[in-house]
Amino acid sequence: MCGIVGYIGKREAEPILLKGLERLEYRGYDSAGIALMQATPPSPRPEVTGRGKQGGARILVYKKKGRVADLEKLLKAKKLTANSFHLGMAHTRWATHGEPTDANAHPHLSNSGDIAIIHNGIIENYLSLKKILTEKGYKFKSATDTEVLVNLIEDVKKNAKVAINEAVRLALREVVGAYAIVVLSKDEPDTLVVAKKGSPVVIGIGKDEFFIASDATPLVEYTNKVTYLGDDEMAVIKNNKLTVKTIKNKIINPYIQKLEMKIEELEKGGFPHFMLKEIFEQPRSIKDSMRGRINGKTGMVKLGGIEKLQDKLFNAKRILILACGTSWHAGLEAKYFFEELARVPTVVEYASEFKYRNPVIYKDDLVIVISQSGETADTLNALHLAKEHGTTVFGICNVVGSSIPRATDAGVYTHAGPEIGVASTKAFTAQITVLLMMCFLLALKKKTMRKTEAQKIIAELENIPGKVEKMLLKNEAIRNIAKKFKNAKNFIYLGRGYGFPIALEGALKLKEIAYIHADGYPASEMKHGPIALVDENMPVVFIANKGASYEKVINNMMEVKARKGKIIAIITKGDAKAKKIADHVIEIPETPEPLMSLVASIPLQLLAYHIAELNGRDVDKPRNLAKSVTVE
Ligand code: AGP
Image (cartoon, rainbow, N blue to C red; front, side, top):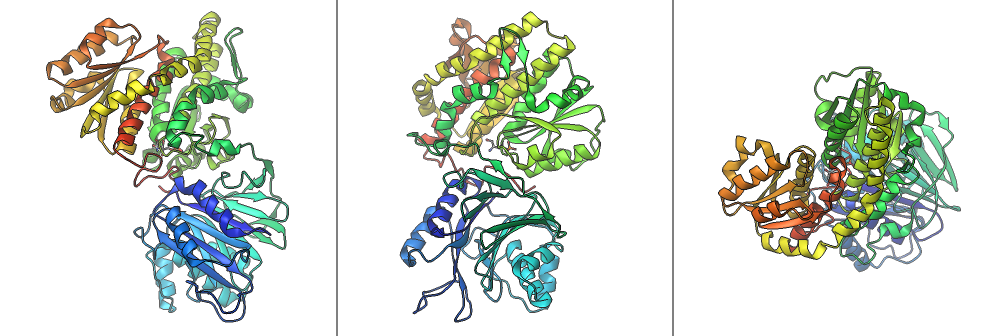
């Protein structure tokens, strides 16, 4: 969580930083702030929020509780001199230590006002460091762990009499926790220092200019040459030169790669929200996830990213899936098809729980971690634990070059394109597409599926984008259903078998963007408790497609109807029986059950979206959430 951005070069830093913040705002939106290096202050000196001695350079800091737009307004009012800042950094915050206030907003200045920092992560030992610094006379204006770090850097710099990059390096050796930081010092107005452990940082390399960001989205219009800092690495940029070294002071050669991202992918393209745009992108994103990887005519499945290690998958006695949130739901859906089609026992664990117990991990397990962002701290930590047990770990991620794919043994990118809306939609269907392809590969190898059977289901998978397209035509009809239920206080989502994870995901979408309580449950479990909630005010969403549990789900619908619950049912096209029972139906085309989630989740995404939008919610940036959860 939190977005950091930095710039050093010949251009005016402020607009680049603000635009970068807008791109990164999905990572947190409790406050925003900017620090600009003023190398030669004009006379008379403008108002500054950071102190600094007369004469030399100084760091101007402006920050504010609220959104990036609030910071932009503040800066407009300050009327900063044009073209005078060529080095700076900015931050958008998701609060961990300390409430969202102006004082807790980043950047933070050291006591002298000479050093400024922005930080994404958590300094776990900040209280003990704060105590030591307080005893030395340091004062703190905020409740943040970050202000402790900037004063620790100042203290080291003062005592060791070293340059800023060395002070950062030495200070970080005393820090326990996760960080991506950018540091500026007024004593070296031509230097930008970056360091990383646990939280992501990418450096964009332009001609005589460098861009820093939490992910590549702020860099895309300036350069396609990037390098990702590794853990315990830092970069010093000075005199147009990038030096990368470890915290232990070993110089390393940065691996520079080409950024594959288009600017249009980062814009709303006429849609009112990114979430709606991303829902509508799914015919394309599912196609992109499959491109060149399967062929229904020949039964070919080829996943280049795991090819070298695919024997680990073929020989696995058990598949262990680790993920959080929506990615966990994709994993749970995969459990059903891995067990049904490939006959491999599959366990799906919340990565956030996995790390903090003593889980049983076998060497011949194949661990699959799933993450859209590739940065989720819980998933990353669970991955490390699995690796400590000597297990092979595959990753399924969307963000290229992020931390999880770099830490796994092998993996498959989902290629869904940047997902900006906090609620995951196209990443979910892309994850399921990749998991299905992995399952087919395994089932073919293990001969639990005949080749002709595989060809048939692969061809069906190739048809899914067309079916999703048809589902999107129901957008207006789904909005009409949403209008009827927008004031409901609670929802229940029910499904059996393959329908159960879809019910969970539908409920999560509604909770996170509409702020309406929703419970996802196996329809079969309804009688064991949740049915007590059903009355004439309770909307119950059923996943009631024609599949193995169809008749049982129909019975559950009857039970809800008998208690006057309001039924919205996702049904197979032309199902007259289900139509008679339900109050509202959304028809989906006939689809083999293992693929059904790819079609059935679309109307649930749209239902949640419209209920949220009709209630005036901030759909793309729901309260209290952030797109990538980089703290545990
Ligand atoms: C999904 O809508 C959520 N915002 C959230 O549950 C998310 O899926 C979870 O935090 C995991 O993120 P990841 O896929 O980036 O690891």
